[in-house]
Each structure stands twice: as C-alpha cells, then as structure tokens.
Image (cartoon, rainbow, N blue to C red):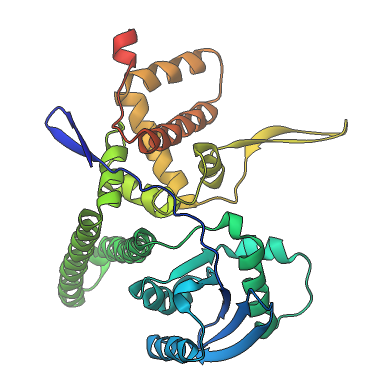
Length: 355
C-alpha cells in the first residue's frame, strides 16, 4: 500500500496484484442461467466428452450439485465455471462459487452472442454446451470474477434503490405544490400523509447512503478509486460512485476512449461513398446516467477549473458550438478519471504551473 498526502487529504494508492498465472483447467463447466433453473454442461478437457445437468437456481441446490460432482471425481478446484451475465439471476451462482474460492468467468452476453454467430432457435442444453466450449476455446481472454465485482454489484443495486427513492420524494413534493387548491380538511389530511412519507423516504435514503459508504470503506480497492476520482475538480461522491459502478471498478473498459463511447460523448463520423455526408455526432445508445452526470461536471468545470474554463472560452471564440465544446470537456474529464486510476496517484493541476 502506497500513501501520499495532498493538502490535508490522504490518498491511499492500491497496489494492484500481478495477473494470475494461467491454469490448465481439467474441466470447463458452462452454465446457462434462467430465473428458476441452471443448465450445466461439464466438458472434460482430456476426453472432450461432456455431461449435462439441470438444477434449481438457488444456493442450496448449487451447493449440493458441487458436492455431487465432486463425489463423481470432478475436481471443482481444477475447473473453470463460465456463464453469461444475466443480471440478478447470476447472483446465487456467483455467491456460492466465490464463497468456496472457485474460479468463475462471467462473460458479457453480447460477447457470447458474437462468439456463437448466427443461430436459430433457443435451447438451454445446447447453450450450456456452447458456454463450456467458449470457455475452453477463449481461455486467453479469461477474466476471473472477483470480490470487488461482487461489491460493485451491491453498489449498483443500492444506487438504483436510492434513485427510486429520490424520484418518489420528488413526486411527493411536486404533488404537494397543488394542495393549496384542495379543500382545507382534505389538505390537512393529505399534507400529514405527505409529511410522514417524506420523512420515511429521507430516512431510507440516508440508510442507503450509509450502506454505500460502508461497502466502499471495507473494500480497499474501491476506497482508493473513490478518493482518486474525487481528486479531479468537479467530481464529487455521487459521480465517483457511478464511475465505479459503470466501469465495474475500472475493469470493464480497456481505456478512456471506450468508456467515452459507452457514455455517449465520443463523436462518430456518418459517411458512405460520395452520397452520404452527415455531420459528425455522438451515438444516442449510451448510459444516460453517466452522460448526464458528466454534463453537470462539465458545467461545473468551466466555472471553477481554470484550465477547462480557458479551453471553453477559447473554443467558443473560435465559433465552436456550446454543446460541442462541452462534449470535448466531458471527454477530458473521462480521460482524467482513467489517468488517475492508471497512475494510482491523485490529479495534479499542472495548468497553474504553466500559466
């Protein structure tokens, strides 16, 4: 663990562990996940024969299944479990395997779809076999699921619940504005209900925020990432939190450019031959939440960050559109975030030394 002081703040630098040496797995276990059941295909690397099982999607059934295949001579410690990311339906499998410190590879659904190519129909048994074959053939792409990813998943759920609570609070406050036009007796009654609801929702939001802080503080890697991102001018707790969620602890994107594309702030050319010449624009298939947060950070930056403020004014004087310049600033902010994580050191504003 490395430490550095910046003013009164102390930033702990997380030293990332060296990549795990590639194991020669004896079995590749592909799991096709649905809400109620798991289709499991066990591929024996030595014989290249496979065996299919169907179990219930709950912790007890998964634990019993692991005990059963262990008795059959399948070494689960020399096996690689692989599945598609199916959201919350994946949770039972993830928790059981990680608690037993078994190797798990959770592959994005789009990656699995690309690997399979064009296919007709849907069959869970075949899908499970395809997943085990994908695991075997693409072992060079292996990225083992970690405890950090479990914590990021918890943060994602808590953040989503916080957003729901905030929307409910706004809805109550909006409806309260029109109560003055209601009958006085009804007004008193409804106002009482709204007051009680508002107090309850605010209490819930506070509990969620406390739990989020506890998870981050307990995970050294996430704690360090949060502090590093917040060292960038304009980025606060909520934006740093969503950066961690969206990037899965900065493990889901190779570089800032790919994340800028994901965030909907990277411009793309629209042209074809000599007939189609549309203006360069961003793609609207993006994470709208991070895009809106980056917009707020950019607006804040052009007021209080001298470097970005000067850049904004210079580009506007050149006749560039406001939104175009703000979009460029968003890209700069994303670049800064990935830079501090990569360097494992807080942001240093070199502009003040140059001016």
